[in-house]
Length: 143
Ligand SMILES: [Zn+2]
Image (cartoon, rainbow, N blue to C red; front, side, top):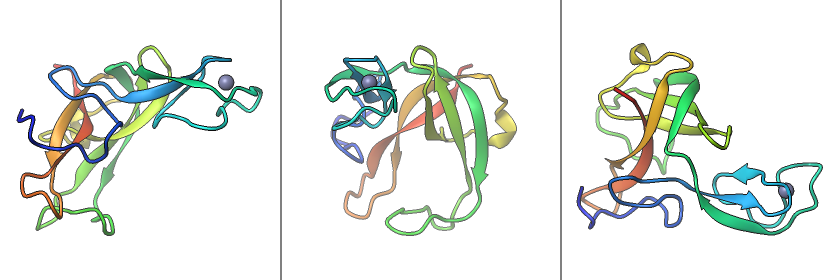
C-alpha cells in the first residue's frame, strides 16, 4: 500500500499494515467512542469530560449488515456505473461498540453472516481531488 495515498480524514485511523481506528475512552467511566469524543461523555450517567485517545480493536464480529443499492448523494464519489456495496455493523472485540463500515472489495452481503469474524483493513476509494483516491477503513471477513 502506497504511503502517498491520503486518508479521507486525518485522525480517524492509523496507517500501515495493521491499521486501527482511533477512538476515545472516557477517563471517568471507560466508555469508548468512535470517532473520538470531545466535550461530554456519551454515557448519560457519567459527568466525565476528559478522554484519552485509544486505538480500537482491529477485530470484531458482524452484528448486522445491509446492501447499499443506491448511489449516495454528493460528496460521495461513486464508481461509474455505480456498484452496490455492502455495509457491515461490526461489534469490536474488546470495546463491545458497534462501528459501521463498508465491506472490503470483493465481498457482498451473500458473504456475510451475523456473528462472523471481521478485521479492519484500509482500501482506496475514489476522490474528487486526488487522482489516486483516498484511504478509508473497511471491514473484511477473516478467512
Ligand atoms: Zn464517561
